[in-house]
Length: 147
Image 1: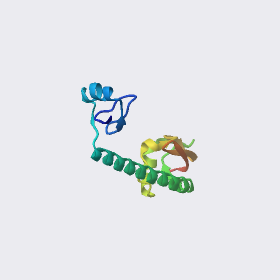
Image 2 (image 1 turned 60 degrees about the vertical axis):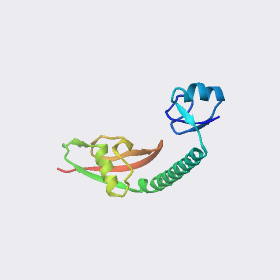
Image 3 (image 1 turned 90 degrees about the vertical axis):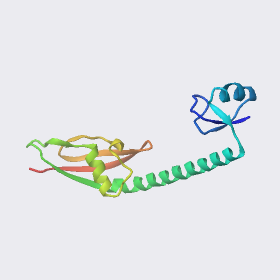
Image 4 (image 1 turned 180 degrees about the vertical axis):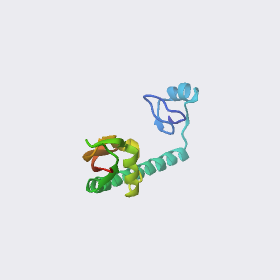
């Protein structure tokens, strides 16, 4: 029996998934409890189209990440902040500032949550990284004293 899940069920599947289950389990439990409904021919086509769309999105994201892996290491971001005579910044360089600088460079998908190695609290060269889909991309930052 083919059913379409109407709710996420642990160890079984996610909402919208089409499953092939035994007749008794489908009729007596899944459908009876409102966790699923019988799958028709149109449901199978819709799920196939959704899978195709998801695959296309994943493929585009993978291509974007490959592009970023090539472009981001070549960038050197420069920040100018107020610092004391020992080189300690009064206000560090945050992940949000790095993300905004990357946005200005054309990297729209990168947010503060993707930036690791911040806040930076001293002047000089710093190596941080951008993490996208568990892929770490190195990024060089130069912080100069504004005083």
